Length: 615
Image (cartoon, rainbow, N blue to C red; front, side, top):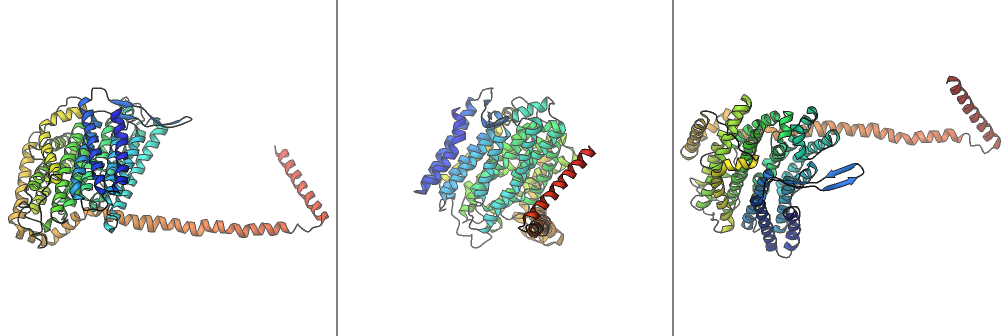
Protein backbone atom coordinates (compact mmCIF):
# COMPACT_ATOMS: atom_id res chain seq x y z
CA UNK A 1 0.00 0.00 0.00
CA UNK A 2 2.87 2.38 0.82
CA UNK A 3 4.43 1.73 -2.60
CA UNK A 4 1.15 2.48 -4.34
CA UNK A 5 0.81 5.76 -2.43
CA UNK A 6 4.34 6.74 -3.47
CA UNK A 7 3.56 5.97 -7.11
CA UNK A 8 0.27 7.86 -7.12
CA UNK A 9 1.28 10.97 -5.16
CA UNK A 10 5.04 11.57 -5.16
CA UNK A 11 5.55 12.53 -8.86
CA UNK A 12 2.87 15.22 -8.68
CA UNK A 13 3.97 16.55 -5.29
CA UNK A 14 7.53 16.64 -6.61
CA UNK A 15 6.39 18.49 -9.74
CA UNK A 16 4.71 21.22 -7.67
CA UNK A 17 7.69 21.55 -5.32
CA UNK A 18 10.22 21.64 -8.17
CA UNK A 19 8.29 24.43 -9.88
CA UNK A 20 7.46 26.54 -6.80
CA UNK A 21 10.72 26.21 -4.85
CA UNK A 22 12.75 26.37 -8.05
CA UNK A 23 11.57 29.94 -8.51
CA UNK A 24 13.70 30.92 -5.52
CA UNK A 25 16.73 28.89 -6.62
CA UNK A 26 16.68 26.91 -9.86
CA UNK A 27 19.26 24.42 -8.52
CA UNK A 28 16.66 23.28 -5.99
CA UNK A 29 14.39 22.13 -8.83
CA UNK A 30 17.04 19.70 -10.07
CA UNK A 31 17.66 18.21 -6.63
CA UNK A 32 13.95 17.80 -5.97
CA UNK A 33 13.57 16.02 -9.32
CA UNK A 34 16.69 13.94 -8.68
CA UNK A 35 15.50 12.85 -5.22
CA UNK A 36 11.95 12.11 -6.39
CA UNK A 37 13.29 10.16 -9.39
CA UNK A 38 15.60 8.15 -7.13
CA UNK A 39 12.77 7.35 -4.68
CA UNK A 40 10.48 6.23 -7.51
CA UNK A 41 13.18 3.99 -9.01
CA UNK A 42 14.08 2.58 -5.58
CA UNK A 43 10.39 1.85 -4.98
CA UNK A 44 10.21 -0.05 -8.27
CA UNK A 45 13.28 -2.09 -7.32
CA UNK A 46 11.73 -2.79 -3.93
CA UNK A 47 8.45 -3.96 -5.53
CA UNK A 48 10.43 -6.11 -7.98
CA UNK A 49 12.51 -7.73 -5.25
CA UNK A 50 9.57 -8.39 -2.90
CA UNK A 51 6.90 -9.38 -5.41
CA UNK A 52 5.38 -12.78 -4.73
CA UNK A 53 3.11 -14.85 -6.91
CA UNK A 54 0.00 -12.78 -6.14
CA UNK A 55 -0.55 -9.46 -7.97
CA UNK A 56 -1.10 -6.29 -5.95
CA UNK A 57 -4.82 -5.77 -6.46
CA UNK A 58 -6.58 -2.73 -4.96
CA UNK A 59 -10.08 -1.54 -5.82
CA UNK A 60 -11.14 2.09 -5.64
CA UNK A 61 -14.28 3.80 -6.86
CA UNK A 62 -13.81 7.09 -8.65
CA UNK A 63 -17.45 8.11 -9.18
CA UNK A 64 -20.61 6.51 -7.77
CA UNK A 65 -24.01 8.01 -8.61
CA UNK A 66 -27.10 5.81 -8.54
CA UNK A 67 -26.47 2.82 -10.78
CA UNK A 68 -23.42 4.49 -12.32
CA UNK A 69 -20.08 3.46 -10.83
CA UNK A 70 -16.70 4.22 -12.40
CA UNK A 71 -13.82 2.19 -10.90
CA UNK A 72 -10.22 3.31 -10.50
CA UNK A 73 -8.40 0.18 -9.37
CA UNK A 74 -4.70 -0.61 -9.04
CA UNK A 75 -3.17 -3.81 -10.41
CA UNK A 76 0.57 -4.57 -10.30
CA UNK A 77 1.89 -7.81 -11.77
CA UNK A 78 5.00 -8.88 -13.68
CA UNK A 79 4.05 -6.86 -16.75
CA UNK A 80 3.45 -3.72 -14.67
CA UNK A 81 6.70 -4.13 -12.75
CA UNK A 82 8.75 -4.35 -15.95
CA UNK A 83 7.15 -1.15 -17.20
CA UNK A 84 7.64 0.55 -13.81
CA UNK A 85 11.35 -0.31 -13.84
CA UNK A 86 11.65 1.10 -17.36
CA UNK A 87 9.71 4.32 -16.65
CA UNK A 88 11.28 5.16 -13.29
CA UNK A 89 14.80 3.88 -14.05
CA UNK A 90 15.17 5.66 -17.38
CA UNK A 91 13.34 8.67 -16.00
CA UNK A 92 15.88 8.94 -13.17
CA UNK A 93 18.81 8.58 -15.62
CA UNK A 94 17.25 11.26 -17.82
CA UNK A 95 16.89 13.69 -14.91
CA UNK A 96 20.51 13.10 -13.87
CA UNK A 97 21.75 13.71 -17.43
CA UNK A 98 19.72 16.94 -17.65
CA UNK A 99 21.77 18.54 -14.86
CA UNK A 100 24.38 19.63 -17.42
CA UNK A 101 22.38 19.46 -20.63
CA UNK A 102 19.74 21.87 -19.29
CA UNK A 103 22.24 23.65 -17.03
CA UNK A 104 22.16 26.97 -18.89
CA UNK A 105 18.41 27.04 -19.44
CA UNK A 106 16.62 29.75 -17.44
CA UNK A 107 13.42 27.69 -17.13
CA UNK A 108 14.77 24.66 -15.29
CA UNK A 109 11.97 24.66 -12.64
CA UNK A 110 9.35 24.43 -15.38
CA UNK A 111 11.32 21.68 -17.12
CA UNK A 112 11.75 19.42 -14.08
CA UNK A 113 8.14 19.94 -13.02
CA UNK A 114 6.92 18.76 -16.43
CA UNK A 115 9.27 15.76 -16.44
CA UNK A 116 7.98 14.58 -13.05
CA UNK A 117 4.40 15.09 -14.17
CA UNK A 118 5.18 13.06 -17.29
CA UNK A 119 6.66 10.19 -15.28
CA UNK A 120 3.63 10.28 -12.97
CA UNK A 121 1.31 9.85 -15.96
CA UNK A 122 3.22 6.79 -17.18
CA UNK A 123 3.16 5.24 -13.71
CA UNK A 124 -0.60 5.73 -13.46
CA UNK A 125 -1.08 4.11 -16.86
CA UNK A 126 0.90 0.96 -16.06
CA UNK A 127 -0.56 0.34 -12.57
CA UNK A 128 -4.19 1.08 -13.42
CA UNK A 129 -6.47 -1.94 -13.50
CA UNK A 130 -9.35 -0.25 -15.29
CA UNK A 131 -9.43 1.56 -18.61
CA UNK A 132 -10.64 4.72 -16.87
CA UNK A 133 -7.46 4.95 -14.78
CA UNK A 134 -5.28 3.93 -17.72
CA UNK A 135 -6.93 6.58 -19.88
CA UNK A 136 -6.29 9.22 -17.20
CA UNK A 137 -2.58 8.34 -17.15
CA UNK A 138 -2.63 8.21 -20.96
CA UNK A 139 -3.99 11.77 -21.11
CA UNK A 140 -1.61 13.07 -18.43
CA UNK A 141 1.25 11.88 -20.65
CA UNK A 142 -0.36 13.49 -23.69
CA UNK A 143 -0.57 16.84 -21.93
CA UNK A 144 2.97 16.57 -20.54
CA UNK A 145 4.39 15.55 -23.93
CA UNK A 146 2.82 18.63 -25.53
CA UNK A 147 4.31 20.83 -22.81
CA UNK A 148 7.76 19.22 -23.07
CA UNK A 149 8.01 19.09 -26.87
CA UNK A 150 7.05 22.78 -27.02
CA UNK A 151 9.27 23.59 -24.02
CA UNK A 152 11.10 26.24 -26.05
CA UNK A 153 7.73 27.58 -27.18
CA UNK A 154 9.12 30.98 -28.19
CA UNK A 155 10.53 29.34 -31.32
CA UNK A 156 7.94 28.59 -33.98
CA UNK A 157 9.27 25.10 -34.70
CA UNK A 158 8.89 23.95 -31.09
CA UNK A 159 5.43 25.52 -30.71
CA UNK A 160 4.20 23.90 -33.94
CA UNK A 161 5.73 20.52 -33.03
CA UNK A 162 4.01 20.51 -29.65
CA UNK A 163 0.66 21.37 -31.20
CA UNK A 164 1.11 18.71 -33.88
CA UNK A 165 1.91 16.06 -31.25
CA UNK A 166 -1.15 17.11 -29.29
CA UNK A 167 -3.51 16.95 -32.29
CA UNK A 168 -2.16 13.69 -33.74
CA UNK A 169 -2.27 11.83 -30.44
CA UNK A 170 -5.64 13.32 -29.46
CA UNK A 171 -7.09 12.01 -32.72
CA UNK A 172 -6.18 8.48 -31.66
CA UNK A 173 -7.35 9.08 -28.09
CA UNK A 174 -10.89 9.78 -29.30
CA UNK A 175 -11.14 6.13 -30.33
CA UNK A 176 -9.99 4.90 -26.91
CA UNK A 177 -12.71 7.00 -25.28
CA UNK A 178 -15.20 5.50 -27.74
CA UNK A 179 -13.93 2.00 -26.87
CA UNK A 180 -14.51 2.66 -23.17
CA UNK A 181 -18.06 3.78 -23.97
CA UNK A 182 -18.74 0.65 -26.03
CA UNK A 183 -17.43 -1.60 -23.26
CA UNK A 184 -19.54 0.17 -20.65
CA UNK A 185 -22.68 -0.17 -22.79
CA UNK A 186 -22.30 -3.69 -24.24
CA UNK A 187 -20.11 -5.48 -21.69
CA UNK A 188 -20.61 -3.48 -18.51
CA UNK A 189 -16.95 -3.96 -17.60
CA UNK A 190 -13.79 -1.88 -18.19
CA UNK A 191 -11.48 -3.89 -15.93
CA UNK A 192 -8.61 -4.92 -18.22
CA UNK A 193 -7.76 -8.05 -16.22
CA UNK A 194 -11.38 -9.21 -16.26
CA UNK A 195 -11.77 -8.32 -19.95
CA UNK A 196 -8.92 -10.70 -20.73
CA UNK A 197 -10.62 -13.43 -18.72
CA UNK A 198 -14.03 -12.79 -20.30
CA UNK A 199 -12.42 -13.03 -23.73
CA UNK A 200 -10.67 -16.30 -22.85
CA UNK A 201 -14.04 -17.70 -21.71
CA UNK A 202 -15.78 -16.47 -24.89
CA UNK A 203 -18.25 -14.35 -22.91
CA UNK A 204 -17.97 -11.22 -25.08
CA UNK A 205 -19.63 -10.73 -28.46
CA UNK A 206 -16.84 -11.07 -31.03
CA UNK A 207 -18.03 -8.18 -33.20
CA UNK A 208 -18.12 -5.76 -30.26
CA UNK A 209 -14.76 -7.04 -29.03
CA UNK A 210 -13.19 -6.61 -32.48
CA UNK A 211 -14.41 -3.01 -32.83
CA UNK A 212 -13.20 -2.19 -29.31
CA UNK A 213 -9.80 -3.76 -29.99
CA UNK A 214 -9.36 -1.81 -33.24
CA UNK A 215 -10.40 1.45 -31.55
CA UNK A 216 -7.86 0.93 -28.76
CA UNK A 217 -5.20 0.07 -31.32
CA UNK A 218 -5.93 3.33 -33.17
CA UNK A 219 -5.13 5.14 -29.95
CA UNK A 220 -1.92 3.13 -29.70
CA UNK A 221 -1.08 4.03 -33.30
CA UNK A 222 -1.11 7.70 -32.32
CA UNK A 223 0.86 7.33 -29.09
CA UNK A 224 3.47 4.92 -30.47
CA UNK A 225 4.01 6.64 -33.82
CA UNK A 226 2.68 3.97 -36.16
CA UNK A 227 1.49 4.46 -39.73
CA UNK A 228 -0.14 6.84 -40.56
CA UNK A 229 0.02 8.92 -37.36
CA UNK A 230 3.82 8.99 -37.03
CA UNK A 231 4.81 12.48 -38.34
CA UNK A 232 4.48 14.05 -34.89
CA UNK A 233 7.18 11.68 -33.62
CA UNK A 234 9.74 13.11 -36.03
CA UNK A 235 8.86 16.74 -35.39
CA UNK A 236 8.96 16.14 -31.62
CA UNK A 237 12.74 16.49 -32.03
CA UNK A 238 12.22 20.24 -31.59
CA UNK A 239 12.17 19.64 -27.84
CA UNK A 240 15.28 19.17 -25.68
CA UNK A 241 17.18 15.95 -26.37
CA UNK A 242 16.49 14.79 -22.82
CA UNK A 243 12.79 15.05 -23.66
CA UNK A 244 13.38 12.96 -26.78
CA UNK A 245 15.08 10.31 -24.67
CA UNK A 246 12.17 10.29 -22.24
CA UNK A 247 9.44 10.19 -24.90
CA UNK A 248 11.17 7.88 -27.38
CA UNK A 249 12.87 5.56 -24.89
CA UNK A 250 11.31 5.30 -21.46
CA UNK A 251 7.68 6.20 -21.50
CA UNK A 252 5.19 7.60 -23.94
CA UNK A 253 5.90 5.66 -27.12
CA UNK A 254 5.90 2.41 -25.17
CA UNK A 255 2.43 3.06 -23.76
CA UNK A 256 0.63 1.97 -26.93
CA UNK A 257 2.45 -1.37 -26.95
CA UNK A 258 1.80 -1.82 -23.23
CA UNK A 259 -1.97 -1.31 -23.55
CA UNK A 260 -2.17 -3.94 -26.30
CA UNK A 261 0.02 -6.29 -24.24
CA UNK A 262 -2.18 -5.76 -21.17
CA UNK A 263 -5.21 -6.76 -23.26
CA UNK A 264 -3.34 -9.47 -25.16
CA UNK A 265 -5.90 -12.25 -24.59
CA UNK A 266 -8.68 -9.85 -25.54
CA UNK A 267 -6.90 -9.08 -28.83
CA UNK A 268 -6.18 -12.74 -29.55
CA UNK A 269 -9.87 -13.54 -29.03
CA UNK A 270 -10.98 -10.97 -31.62
CA UNK A 271 -8.38 -11.75 -34.30
CA UNK A 272 -7.43 -8.05 -34.17
CA UNK A 273 -3.79 -9.09 -33.81
CA UNK A 274 -3.74 -9.64 -37.58
CA UNK A 275 -4.43 -5.92 -38.08
CA UNK A 276 -1.76 -5.04 -35.50
CA UNK A 277 0.87 -7.19 -37.25
CA UNK A 278 0.23 -5.80 -40.74
CA UNK A 279 0.12 -2.13 -39.73
CA UNK A 280 3.24 -2.61 -37.60
CA UNK A 281 5.16 -4.36 -40.39
CA UNK A 282 4.42 -1.50 -42.78
CA UNK A 283 5.42 1.03 -40.10
CA UNK A 284 8.69 -0.82 -39.42
CA UNK A 285 9.58 -0.71 -43.12
CA UNK A 286 8.74 2.99 -43.48
CA UNK A 287 10.72 3.90 -40.37
CA UNK A 288 13.80 1.89 -41.33
CA UNK A 289 13.99 3.08 -44.93
CA UNK A 290 13.34 6.73 -43.99
CA UNK A 291 16.11 6.63 -41.35
CA UNK A 292 18.65 5.79 -44.07
CA UNK A 293 18.69 9.29 -45.56
CA UNK A 294 18.03 11.70 -42.67
CA UNK A 295 20.62 14.34 -41.78
CA UNK A 296 19.68 15.34 -38.25
CA UNK A 297 20.97 13.05 -35.52
CA UNK A 298 17.70 13.03 -33.59
CA UNK A 299 15.55 12.43 -36.67
CA UNK A 300 17.56 9.34 -37.56
CA UNK A 301 16.95 8.04 -34.06
CA UNK A 302 13.28 9.06 -34.22
CA UNK A 303 12.68 7.04 -37.37
CA UNK A 304 14.55 4.14 -35.79
CA UNK A 305 12.21 4.44 -32.81
CA UNK A 306 9.24 4.15 -35.12
CA UNK A 307 10.80 1.10 -36.78
CA UNK A 308 11.74 -0.74 -33.59
CA UNK A 309 8.47 -0.01 -31.81
CA UNK A 310 6.83 -1.51 -34.87
CA UNK A 311 9.03 -4.58 -34.56
CA UNK A 312 7.79 -4.97 -30.97
CA UNK A 313 4.21 -4.52 -32.21
CA UNK A 314 4.84 -7.22 -34.82
CA UNK A 315 5.89 -9.56 -32.02
CA UNK A 316 2.51 -9.03 -30.35
CA UNK A 317 0.67 -9.14 -33.67
CA UNK A 318 2.00 -12.57 -34.62
CA UNK A 319 0.86 -13.95 -31.28
CA UNK A 320 3.95 -13.71 -29.08
CA UNK A 321 3.54 -11.59 -25.96
CA UNK A 322 7.05 -12.67 -24.91
CA UNK A 323 8.77 -11.49 -28.11
CA UNK A 324 6.92 -8.17 -28.26
CA UNK A 325 7.49 -7.20 -24.64
CA UNK A 326 11.11 -8.39 -24.63
CA UNK A 327 11.91 -6.16 -27.58
CA UNK A 328 10.04 -3.26 -25.98
CA UNK A 329 12.16 -3.64 -22.84
CA UNK A 330 15.44 -3.91 -24.74
CA UNK A 331 14.51 -1.05 -27.06
CA UNK A 332 13.70 1.24 -24.13
CA UNK A 333 17.20 0.73 -22.72
CA UNK A 334 19.31 1.01 -25.86
CA UNK A 335 17.20 3.84 -27.30
CA UNK A 336 17.50 5.89 -24.11
CA UNK A 337 21.26 5.27 -24.32
CA UNK A 338 21.35 6.40 -27.96
CA UNK A 339 19.31 9.54 -27.36
CA UNK A 340 21.34 10.56 -24.33
CA UNK A 341 24.52 9.85 -26.31
CA UNK A 342 23.12 12.05 -29.08
CA UNK A 343 22.44 14.68 -26.43
CA UNK A 344 26.07 14.47 -25.32
CA UNK A 345 27.22 14.89 -28.94
CA UNK A 346 24.94 17.88 -29.44
CA UNK A 347 26.11 19.33 -26.12
CA UNK A 348 29.82 19.08 -26.90
CA UNK A 349 29.31 20.32 -30.50
CA UNK A 350 27.52 23.51 -29.39
CA UNK A 351 24.03 22.22 -30.23
CA UNK A 352 24.84 21.15 -33.78
CA UNK A 353 22.30 18.50 -34.82
CA UNK A 354 23.31 17.95 -38.44
CA UNK A 355 25.40 14.76 -38.57
CA UNK A 356 26.93 15.83 -41.91
CA UNK A 357 28.58 18.83 -40.22
CA UNK A 358 30.26 16.67 -37.60
CA UNK A 359 33.07 14.11 -37.81
CA UNK A 360 36.12 13.02 -35.87
CA UNK A 361 34.49 13.41 -32.45
CA UNK A 362 35.98 10.13 -31.27
CA UNK A 363 39.16 12.06 -30.44
CA UNK A 364 37.41 14.58 -28.18
CA UNK A 365 34.81 12.23 -26.70
CA UNK A 366 36.02 8.62 -26.77
CA UNK A 367 33.73 7.54 -23.94
CA UNK A 368 30.65 8.93 -25.68
CA UNK A 369 31.77 7.20 -28.89
CA UNK A 370 32.14 3.91 -27.01
CA UNK A 371 28.80 4.13 -25.24
CA UNK A 372 26.98 5.17 -28.41
CA UNK A 373 28.64 2.30 -30.27
CA UNK A 374 27.31 -0.14 -27.66
CA UNK A 375 23.80 1.27 -28.05
CA UNK A 376 24.16 1.12 -31.82
CA UNK A 377 25.21 -2.52 -31.78
CA UNK A 378 22.26 -3.39 -29.57
CA UNK A 379 19.86 -1.57 -31.90
CA UNK A 380 21.41 -3.27 -34.91
CA UNK A 381 20.88 -6.64 -33.26
CA UNK A 382 24.49 -7.74 -32.97
CA UNK A 383 25.46 -10.37 -30.39
CA UNK A 384 26.09 -10.32 -27.48
CA UNK A 385 23.93 -7.20 -26.93
CA UNK A 386 20.31 -7.44 -25.78
CA UNK A 387 18.77 -6.22 -29.04
CA UNK A 388 20.13 -9.29 -30.82
CA UNK A 389 18.03 -11.73 -28.78
CA UNK A 390 14.71 -9.89 -28.92
CA UNK A 391 14.93 -8.91 -32.60
CA UNK A 392 15.84 -12.46 -33.59
CA UNK A 393 12.91 -13.75 -31.55
CA UNK A 394 10.44 -11.35 -33.21
CA UNK A 395 11.71 -12.16 -36.72
CA UNK A 396 11.45 -15.90 -36.07
CA UNK A 397 7.87 -15.52 -34.82
CA UNK A 398 7.00 -13.32 -37.82
CA UNK A 399 8.39 -15.84 -40.30
CA UNK A 400 6.59 -18.74 -38.60
CA UNK A 401 3.22 -17.06 -37.95
CA UNK A 402 3.02 -13.69 -39.71
CA UNK A 403 2.55 -14.46 -43.38
CA UNK A 404 4.67 -13.25 -46.35
CA UNK A 405 3.81 -9.52 -46.10
CA UNK A 406 4.61 -9.22 -42.40
CA UNK A 407 7.66 -11.48 -42.50
CA UNK A 408 9.22 -9.73 -45.51
CA UNK A 409 8.77 -6.14 -44.31
CA UNK A 410 9.85 -6.74 -40.73
CA UNK A 411 12.92 -8.71 -41.86
CA UNK A 412 13.97 -5.87 -44.17
CA UNK A 413 13.44 -3.39 -41.34
CA UNK A 414 15.48 -5.52 -38.99
CA UNK A 415 18.37 -5.81 -41.45
CA UNK A 416 18.40 -2.09 -42.28
CA UNK A 417 18.92 -1.24 -38.61
CA UNK A 418 22.66 -1.82 -38.93
CA UNK A 419 22.82 0.36 -42.05
CA UNK A 420 21.31 3.56 -40.69
CA UNK A 421 22.84 3.33 -37.21
CA UNK A 422 26.33 2.57 -38.61
CA UNK A 423 25.96 5.52 -40.99
CA UNK A 424 25.08 7.79 -38.06
CA UNK A 425 28.00 6.64 -35.89
CA UNK A 426 30.51 6.93 -38.74
CA UNK A 427 29.36 10.44 -39.67
CA UNK A 428 29.68 11.64 -36.07
CA UNK A 429 32.85 10.01 -34.84
CA UNK A 430 35.11 9.10 -37.78
CA UNK A 431 36.98 11.29 -40.23
CA UNK A 432 37.28 15.02 -39.64
CA UNK A 433 34.66 17.75 -39.03
CA UNK A 434 32.98 18.65 -42.31
CA UNK A 435 32.06 22.15 -41.13
CA UNK A 436 34.74 24.70 -40.36
CA UNK A 437 32.62 26.29 -37.64
CA UNK A 438 32.60 22.98 -35.75
CA UNK A 439 36.31 22.21 -36.03
CA UNK A 440 38.26 23.50 -33.05
CA UNK A 441 35.15 24.37 -31.02
CA UNK A 442 34.31 20.95 -29.62
CA UNK A 443 34.71 20.36 -25.89
CA UNK A 444 34.54 16.99 -24.16
CA UNK A 445 31.90 16.31 -21.48
CA UNK A 446 34.24 15.88 -18.53
CA UNK A 447 31.88 15.23 -15.63
CA UNK A 448 29.86 12.38 -14.28
CA UNK A 449 26.45 13.98 -14.91
CA UNK A 450 26.92 13.21 -18.61
CA UNK A 451 29.03 10.07 -18.47
CA UNK A 452 27.41 8.20 -15.58
CA UNK A 453 23.95 7.63 -17.16
CA UNK A 454 25.58 6.66 -20.45
CA UNK A 455 27.92 4.19 -18.76
CA UNK A 456 25.15 2.59 -16.71
CA UNK A 457 22.81 2.23 -19.70
CA UNK A 458 25.63 0.81 -21.85
CA UNK A 459 26.45 -1.72 -19.14
CA UNK A 460 22.76 -2.66 -18.77
CA UNK A 461 22.16 -3.18 -22.50
CA UNK A 462 25.18 -5.51 -22.53
CA UNK A 463 24.65 -7.19 -19.16
CA UNK A 464 20.92 -7.80 -19.51
CA UNK A 465 21.65 -9.93 -22.57
CA UNK A 466 22.74 -12.65 -20.13
CA UNK A 467 19.25 -12.75 -18.63
CA UNK A 468 17.02 -12.65 -21.72
CA UNK A 469 15.44 -16.02 -20.99
CA UNK A 470 14.81 -15.04 -17.38
CA UNK A 471 13.33 -11.72 -18.51
CA UNK A 472 10.95 -13.43 -20.94
CA UNK A 473 9.77 -15.93 -18.35
CA UNK A 474 9.32 -13.14 -15.81
CA UNK A 475 7.19 -11.09 -18.22
CA UNK A 476 4.85 -13.91 -19.25
CA UNK A 477 4.92 -15.69 -15.87
CA UNK A 478 5.91 -19.12 -17.16
CA UNK A 479 8.51 -20.94 -19.25
CA UNK A 480 8.27 -20.58 -23.02
CA UNK A 481 9.64 -22.45 -25.97
CA UNK A 482 11.76 -20.03 -27.99
CA UNK A 483 10.99 -20.03 -31.73
CA UNK A 484 13.58 -21.34 -34.14
CA UNK A 485 13.80 -20.85 -37.90
CA UNK A 486 16.53 -22.82 -39.61
CA UNK A 487 19.17 -20.60 -41.18
CA UNK A 488 17.65 -17.35 -39.84
CA UNK A 489 20.56 -16.48 -37.57
CA UNK A 490 23.17 -17.16 -40.23
CA UNK A 491 21.19 -15.21 -42.82
CA UNK A 492 20.76 -12.21 -40.52
CA UNK A 493 24.44 -12.11 -39.59
CA UNK A 494 25.51 -12.39 -43.25
CA UNK A 495 23.04 -9.71 -44.27
CA UNK A 496 24.12 -7.35 -41.48
CA UNK A 497 27.80 -7.95 -42.22
CA UNK A 498 27.25 -7.11 -45.89
CA UNK A 499 25.31 -3.93 -45.09
CA UNK A 500 27.92 -2.90 -42.51
CA UNK A 501 30.71 -3.30 -45.07
CA UNK A 502 28.78 -1.31 -47.69
CA UNK A 503 28.00 1.56 -45.31
CA UNK A 504 31.55 1.77 -43.94
CA UNK A 505 32.98 1.57 -47.44
CA UNK A 506 30.72 4.35 -48.76
CA UNK A 507 30.95 6.73 -45.83
CA UNK A 508 34.64 6.23 -44.97
CA UNK A 509 36.41 5.43 -48.24
CA UNK A 510 33.84 6.02 -50.93
CA UNK A 511 32.54 9.57 -50.50
CA UNK A 512 33.19 10.37 -54.17
CA UNK A 513 31.22 7.31 -55.28
CA UNK A 514 28.45 8.21 -52.83
CA UNK A 515 28.28 11.71 -54.29
CA UNK A 516 28.00 10.37 -57.85
CA UNK A 517 25.24 7.96 -56.84
CA UNK A 518 23.32 10.73 -55.07
CA UNK A 519 23.42 12.94 -58.19
CA UNK A 520 21.50 10.42 -60.29
CA UNK A 521 17.95 11.64 -60.97
CA UNK A 522 16.29 8.38 -59.94
CA UNK A 523 18.24 8.28 -56.68
CA UNK A 524 17.29 11.89 -55.97
CA UNK A 525 13.61 10.99 -56.30
CA UNK A 526 13.99 8.04 -53.94
CA UNK A 527 15.97 10.21 -51.53
CA UNK A 528 13.22 12.86 -51.45
CA UNK A 529 10.50 10.26 -50.86
CA UNK A 530 12.43 8.68 -47.98
CA UNK A 531 13.67 12.01 -46.57
CA UNK A 532 10.07 13.26 -46.36
CA UNK A 533 8.79 10.08 -44.74
CA UNK A 534 6.91 8.94 -47.84
CA UNK A 535 5.06 12.30 -47.78
CA UNK A 536 2.56 11.01 -45.24
CA UNK A 537 2.68 14.27 -43.30
CA UNK A 538 2.18 16.25 -46.51
CA UNK A 539 -0.78 14.02 -47.40
CA UNK A 540 -2.40 14.44 -44.00
CA UNK A 541 -1.85 18.21 -44.15
CA UNK A 542 -3.34 18.37 -47.66
CA UNK A 543 -6.41 16.36 -46.67
CA UNK A 544 -6.87 18.36 -43.48
CA UNK A 545 -6.61 21.68 -45.31
CA UNK A 546 -8.46 20.91 -48.54
CA UNK A 547 -11.02 18.34 -47.43
CA UNK A 548 -11.74 19.21 -43.80
CA UNK A 549 -11.08 22.96 -43.74
CA UNK A 550 -11.82 24.01 -47.32
CA UNK A 551 -14.41 21.30 -47.90
CA UNK A 552 -16.34 20.22 -44.84
CA UNK A 553 -15.67 23.27 -42.67
CA UNK A 554 -16.52 25.78 -45.41
CA UNK A 555 -19.65 23.80 -46.33
CA UNK A 556 -20.79 23.87 -42.72
CA UNK A 557 -20.07 27.59 -42.58
CA UNK A 558 -22.18 28.14 -45.72
CA UNK A 559 -25.05 26.14 -44.18
CA UNK A 560 -24.69 28.11 -40.94
CA UNK A 561 -24.62 31.48 -42.73
CA UNK A 562 -27.16 30.93 -45.50
CA UNK A 563 -29.63 28.49 -43.95
CA UNK A 564 -29.48 28.51 -40.16
CA UNK A 565 -28.89 32.26 -39.92
CA UNK A 566 -31.69 32.81 -42.49
CA UNK A 567 -34.12 30.75 -40.40
CA UNK A 568 -33.16 32.57 -37.21
CA UNK A 569 -33.26 36.01 -38.83
CA UNK A 570 -36.63 35.22 -40.47
CA UNK A 571 -38.28 34.85 -37.07
CA UNK A 572 -38.21 38.64 -36.66
CA UNK A 573 -40.39 39.58 -39.68
CA UNK A 574 -42.55 36.47 -39.06
CA UNK A 575 -43.24 37.59 -35.50
CA UNK A 576 -43.95 41.11 -36.73
CA UNK A 577 -46.47 39.73 -39.25
CA UNK A 578 -48.30 37.78 -36.55
CA UNK A 579 -48.31 40.87 -34.36
CA UNK A 580 -49.83 42.98 -37.15
CA UNK A 581 -52.47 40.30 -37.91
CA UNK A 582 -53.66 40.14 -34.32
CA UNK A 583 -53.43 43.89 -33.83
CA UNK A 584 -56.39 44.32 -36.29
CA UNK A 585 -58.73 42.88 -33.69
CA UNK A 586 -57.63 45.32 -31.01
CA UNK A 587 -60.10 48.15 -31.80
CA UNK A 588 -60.96 49.16 -28.23
CA UNK A 589 -64.68 48.43 -28.74
CA UNK A 590 -66.33 45.91 -26.39
CA UNK A 591 -68.70 44.65 -29.08
CA UNK A 592 -65.81 43.66 -31.34
CA UNK A 593 -64.14 41.73 -28.51
CA UNK A 594 -67.41 39.85 -27.66
CA UNK A 595 -67.89 38.95 -31.33
CA UNK A 596 -64.32 37.68 -31.64
CA UNK A 597 -64.76 35.63 -28.47
CA UNK A 598 -67.98 34.08 -29.80
CA UNK A 599 -66.34 33.16 -33.11
CA UNK A 600 -63.45 31.50 -31.23
CA UNK A 601 -65.81 29.48 -29.05
CA UNK A 602 -67.78 28.37 -32.09
CA UNK A 603 -64.62 27.19 -33.83
CA UNK A 604 -63.60 25.16 -30.76
CA UNK A 605 -67.07 23.57 -30.42
CA UNK A 606 -67.13 22.61 -34.11
CA UNK A 607 -63.67 21.10 -33.82
CA UNK A 608 -64.71 19.04 -30.80
CA UNK A 609 -67.82 17.76 -32.56
CA UNK A 610 -65.81 16.73 -35.62
CA UNK A 611 -63.32 14.85 -33.47
CA UNK A 612 -66.05 13.10 -31.43
CA UNK A 613 -67.96 12.16 -34.57
CA UNK A 614 -64.81 10.82 -36.16
CA UNK A 615 -64.07 8.68 -33.12
